[in-house]
Image (cartoon, helix red, strand yellow):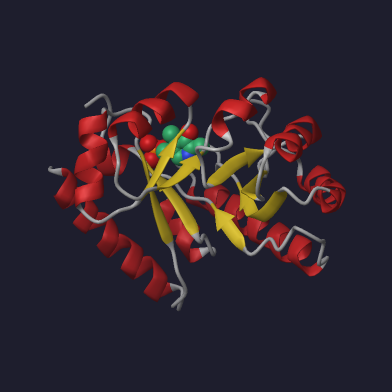
Amino acid sequence: MTIKQNYERISEQIRSAKSRSNRDDQVTLIAVTKEVSVHVAKEVLELGINQLGENRFEGLQDKQDHINTDVVWHFIGSLQTRKVKDIIHRIDYLHSLDRMSLANEIQKRANEPLKCFIQVNISGEESKHGLSPEEAVNFARELAELDKVYVVGLMTMAPYTEDQQVIRNSFKGLKDLQTKIKGLEIANVPCNELSMGMSNDFEIAIEEGATFIRIGTDLVGKGR
Ligand SMILES: *Cc1c(COP(=O)(O)O)cnc(C)c1O
C-alpha cells in the first residue's frame, strides 16, 4: 500500500464514521510522523495534509529543519518542563498538558497563548500518562490564572485492547468530561475539542465525538 492509498482508505473511513454518527462538523487528521523520515513526512504533505504530529524534540526539530511549507505542528509526546523553552516557539498545539509545573513554565516562556489539550487518563491504567477526570477538572480551574495556557480541549489514549466496548467507553468518558469542563466556562479554557483516536480506534473515536485524530502506523507505517 502506498501512503496515498492509505490516505484514501482513511479518508473514506473518516467519512463513514462521521455519517454513521450524523456529524457534519470538522474532524482534523493529524499525521503522526514520529516513526518515519523527513522524506515520508514530505510525501504526506504532498497529499494535502498539513497537520503533523511528533512526540520528541529531536524528531520535531529534524522535520522542521527540512520542511519549509506551511505546517500546523502538534506535539503529542510527554514534555519535560526543561524542554518547554526549546519547543514552545516551534509548535501550534500541545496535546500532553498534565501538570501545573508544566503550565507554569509555559506561562513563563510563551509570547502568545499556546493551544493545549489536557491529557486525561480516562481508563485509569497505571501505565498511562495523564490526569484522572477529577484531577482534570481541578487542574482546569487552576489554569484560569494563566493567560498563556489556552485549553482548547482534552486528549486521551484508549486502552490497548481488542474489546471495542472498553475503547468506546473511554472515548465516551472523555466526551462527558469535555462537556462538563466546557460548561464551567473557565477563563482561558474553552474546551471545545477532543483529541482522541489512533490507528486502531479512530473510527470509534469519531463516532464518540473526536475533533482531532492522531494517526501514524495506518497512514505512514513504521520506520520508513
Ligand atoms: C504514536 C502516537 C500516535 C499514533 O499512533 P498509531 O497507532 O501509530 O496511529 C497517536 N498519539 C500518540 C500520543 C502517540 O504517541
